[in-house]
Length: 198
Image (cartoon, rainbow, N blue to C red; front, side, top):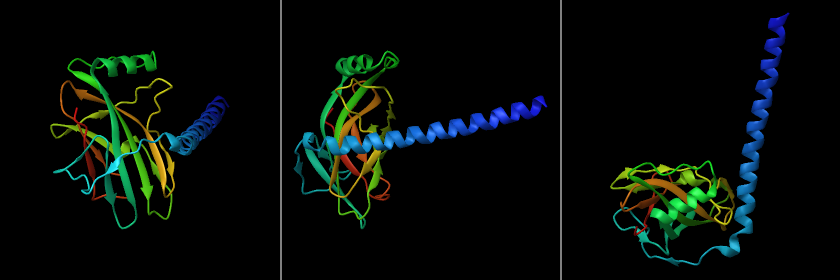
């Protein structure tokens, strides 16, 4: 009899856990979508360059790379970079649970924006559509919390002609130059690159 009760409790606990996970995913997607639509007026205007932001010829801060595929076109840019002591202070002020950067590393914050165009369907975007490289080596995306006035580039839907922006946080080796790559699922063979200049 006791074994049946334990089994029943485990089944109830499993259903509760699955329900909570699905609810938090729905909340994250919904909050990301509302942030996208609410923040459209705050997007910085950037110059669209004539080149596509290739690895050999990346765009720079303030320029937008045009990334195209048969299914969609994206305009992606980075407008601000914060690193070093200032970035570490911002991350530490974001939450008491954020860690100090490990020895030899620093936090690297970059503000990015993406405009999605020419797509028939909405797409889900997240910080995982971006990668940061130092000397050809991928750097770790940090899940550190930021202060309330610094919106992270969160997971969420974006419709055709929609715009999304926010901050990305990475842990990088100190004093290394960062090359940012944008490669959403819809562009599996085509990446755009941004030289952050920092």
